[in-house]
Amino acid sequence: MTPQEQLLHYRKSIDNFDAVLIHTLAERFRITKAVGTLKASADLPPSDPKREEEQVERLRRLAEHADLDPDFAEKFLEFVIREVIQHHKQARS
Amino acid sequence: MTPQEQLLHYRKSIDNFDAVLIHTLAERFRITKAVGTLKASADLPPSDPKREEEQVERLRRLAEHADLDPDFAEKFLEFVIREVIQHHKQARS
Image 1 (tube, rainbow over the protein chains, first blue to last red):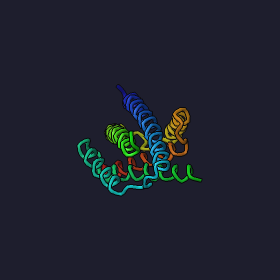
Image 2: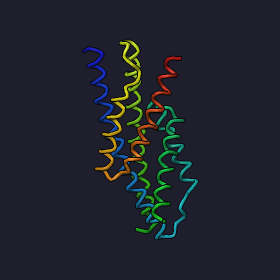
Image 3: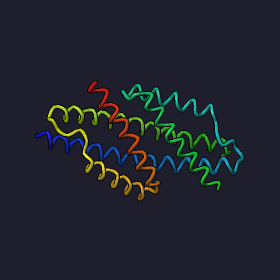
Image 4: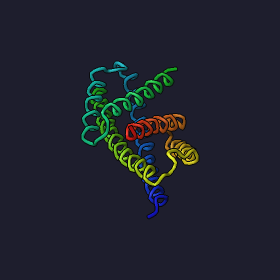
């Protein structure tokens, strides 16, 4: 395999993983949307700091086992949660 | 199901999807690491604007079909690529 062929081979895998990521994120947002609706209708508190702390700890642990930088995993979760909060704000307005 | 039980049910799904995301990201970074090594050893250019443009277009399209905000998909790709560049810099130093 030439380096150019090897590169194309890697890129096909990256594209496949990106499709997994996008579809998994789409499904995750479908659930957080339902969570937002549930919390509003059942008068549950919109945020839960204990739950968020557990999520961070768990994702850091999963990342470590998968050889992914735990700090990146935490930044990633924050990035996703920021978007969830944005959705909830849009839903309320 | 009480609202509290429904919430726990949703959270289990969110946790499962987060595990998918973390492991997929870990595998994606394994590949981009190999791409970095390949590019360095084969003297290929480190960045490829045309490829990046195609990735953005493709992910926006996938996001639209999955009912995910295409702007979020683009921000997500930028977030991941920033981390890849960080890795490549660390590998070189």
